Length: 61
Image 1: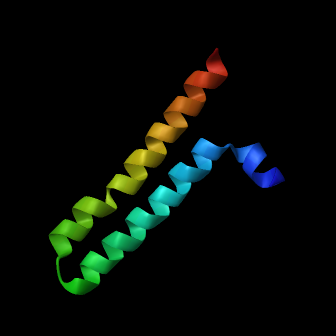
Image 2 (image 1 turned 45 degrees about the vertical axis):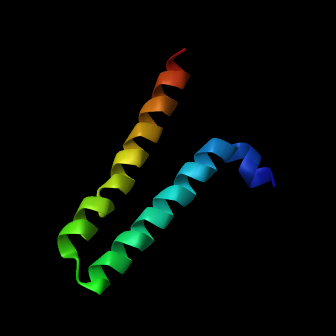
């Protein structure tokens, strides 16, 4: 529980969402839909970049 307070609930949800996206992209890749897997797989780094951006903006205030 201390870990959730330190990271923050929203950040933890975003990290879990990124994990789900990565797993879904791997599922698509193994299913044979490589182009769709690459497209979906690029969502995770994008979400992480948005998360980092918001943290930087909040620290600057």
